[in-house]
Image (cartoon, rainbow, N blue to C red; front, side, top):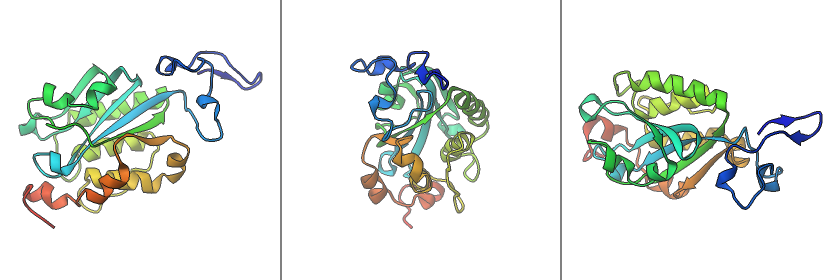
Length: 221
């Protein structure tokens, strides 16, 4: 939404107004600006797959970027033998949040993501994040520096969201824990929010999966 601070007036309709048909196109933050903020009405999404649902036992994180939830660019990074870096244009949030990978990837996730996390951002940041993700997704998957969690972290870093620092190997559960621990102000004002799943249950049940990444699903810490 374009805003004129001199006139205290919005000059354009919210680009995501169709998502909220019960509100006017010029309504800001559901008429509750004390509780919510909206940075240009754009979103990015993290899709967190639980360890128990993944072949490696290490969990998985994928990401979607875009201005329209029905027209996102989806990134999901794997080892070369598992399909390598996957980038899909023009895919909807609803589809990704279900069993999209099972239906469309030969070696994708076989279950729906346990958590879907939304992060509000801007169109300019979206473009920078996509440039970074395009480069990372075409680079070889490596355990220590370019696994699925590293790709998501690099994108979050571009968006100036604190992604945390891993001690050794980045994992999806470490990423989620650090994201909510290190960005409490953004969580409080709903810039970062969980739109599917139960964050507390995920963090409670998700193991520290570094050993599973290295040794396989049956290995325990």
